[in-house]
Amino acid sequence: MENRRKTTNYIPEPKFQFRFIRVLVLGSFVQMALICAILYYFLGENYRILVKYAGLEPDVTNVLYRELRILVGVLVSVFTLHLLAVAVLGVLFSHRVGGAVYAMKRTMAEIVNGKDARLKLRKGDEFQEVQDLFNEMIDTLKSSSHFTRAANER
Image: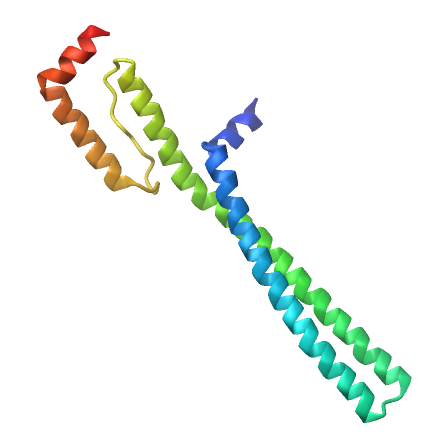
């Protein structure tokens, strides 16, 4: 039960957050794949030219190609770590936005059900200005007779 609560805290709007993280990670993956492909192509071409025209011994040629494979492996490892960092940052940022959206939806549902509610966002959440305007709107509606009549009719 405790783990579910922690997951819910970090992912208050799963549909939005997973879509956001997916776009972020896939965009990063495409960029990194293109960079790796371009680097591998040009480095591979340089190695082939070097091996072809330098008249190197087969052992030296093998060492050069092994170093190329190691370089590509290091790049893939670094880019994998980068993708993980992008995913973590995506969760953290989408949490700030998703938490604010969740709070707005919850507050609006309370108001629709006739409760006297105000929007309260956590410090650091996005949309702080929206919170102020939303609460100001609620105060204005409360002071008008229209809001009072609608609440009494429920």
